[in-house]
Picture 1 (tube, one colour):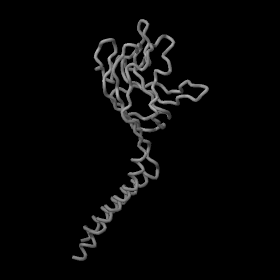
Picture 2 (cartoon, rainbow, N blue to C red; picture 1 turned 90 degrees about the vertical axis):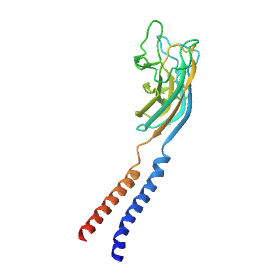
Picture 3 (cartoon, rainbow, N blue to C red; picture 1 turned 45 degrees about the vertical axis):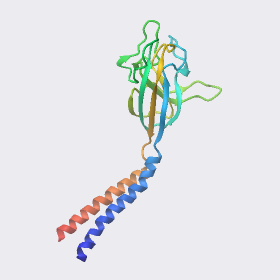
Picture 4 (cartoon, rainbow, N blue to C red; picture 1 turned 30 degrees about the vertical axis):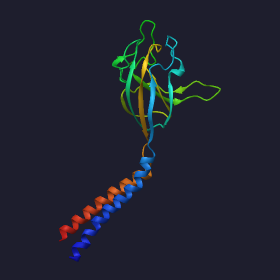
Length: 211
């Protein structure tokens, strides 16, 4: 009986050891995830339209949410916008999927290569006085759901990929999170836990075969 109890003790210790290592690593991962909660993107961002010279910079709304290059950026949006006078505000953030917002007649969209009437984003620095011009990266599709790796650091900006904003109504509401690549020390703790558990299992199997 004593022999059997001493053989089972290392198994319990291995699980306790792994649990301790994971507990040490988990706070570092959890605390590094940044979140943006319920940010409203109105259909009527401003009483403005886009023309052949482009759109005004303020058509991009700075969320104040910082993203680092290499972060895993996750965005979810819902709600409805109406894109003409009297139309119900029911159009979702995905917009017209697969239909690029190419210029037509006198209408020029915020991002001509992205889905028309959709939620779009950019990442960048809002500018420092005396230069107030936004230094933003290329626009990208957001839609209702996006998981992507940030290609640059800066504040997350949203806009509506429309050309004529005067008659818009409603809003989309977005949430976002940015998770950085785990630090080497955190990865080392996870690796050590896995290695310790594997060795303990191998050791117990060896003891069982010896019996």
